Length: 268
Image (cartoon, rainbow, N blue to C red; front, side, top):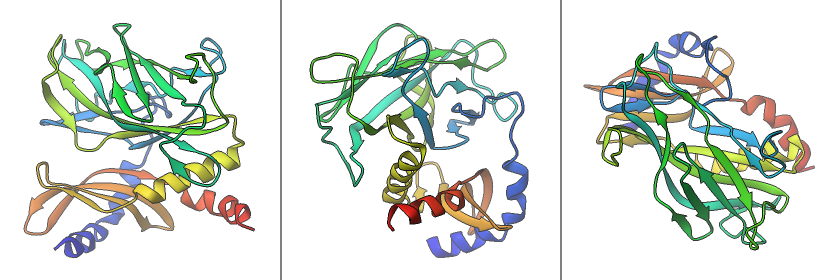
């Protein structure tokens, strides 16, 4: 059945170029969610950022921000948008991803309420991270702070890449009960001192390790990590309409083709 669904999805690839166009008023590097019913849709599930903000210093960043795409689906004014951190901190040492950073590094998230959530090799402590309050138009543009610390609790970290997962959800103010949620977590990959080529190799390795066609029975959303159309590669999502019919709800262009040359060079 899943194979038939994938085949059906490829038949409507001609609509990809429409959804893949950028929204000029949004920040390209931001997480850009929108709401349809009780589900939160995302412009991407993988975001690449660098530690080293001018204001935060060498081991901190407030990227990616969150910039709601009101045109595609507003949230409820007065509600809160929140992150639920998931899993363990992952570290790339140049050869492989693992949950064993060399100096017990961990990432702290400081949210809009100045609360701190910690993600380390053992998991998550500190609860949820509040991104901000939805405005009167159903939108929100906000940044929360991410910082890298070592075993001595100092702002520091081994050279490499670090990855965390965050589940996005909407709640009433001062509540932890979701009224809408994203079916899959956002993955954020942080660069700490790697060259662009080495960092993209790490991202590619992580993307490959997690790439799989997924179907969520609860929401009816089919996620396909890579589809080729018009000579380009896209990551796409479809909503199950029944009778093996799927409606395209999200598509964004992947950068795999650009990465291939650098990855081939890495293995020479």
